[in-house]
Image 1 (cartoon, rainbow, N blue to C red):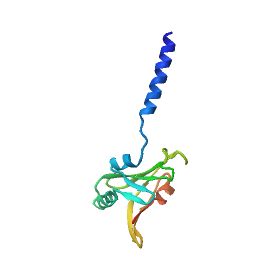
Image 2 (image 1 turned 120 degrees about the vertical axis):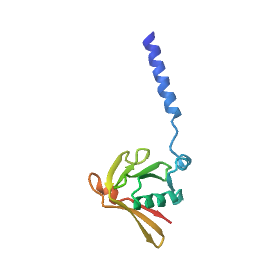
Image 3 (image 1 turned 135 degrees about the vertical axis):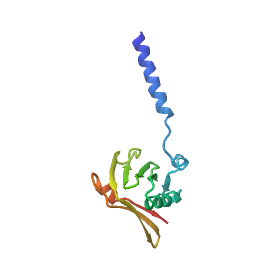
Image 4 (image 1 turned 90 degrees about the vertical axis):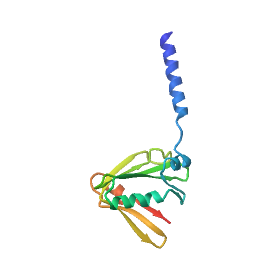
Length: 142
């Protein structure tokens, strides 16, 4: 009888913990200070400019850009500057309609280029594993 009670208790714990986890949605991303792109609607973009300035002054800093898919799933772009280089992580583990994986690389710097439609941010000087992930990073602020 005690094994049966143990199994029931374990099942209840698992179910309750699954119910308590909240999805990472638009409001959560903004509340966490993420730079958010919801189908072209940008929030907290001033944080990206601050991050860019910190890189030019060799100040450690990190940001998260959260971009939402058409289905509303978040894709995370984490950039962490250690004073010398940027660790870039591309995370699609919360995208229910894509490949669920995390890929990282390291890049020398973040470049801001003024173009007709705004400022385009790209990573440059990527090296090590998954360099194509960094080379494909592009974020446009209109």
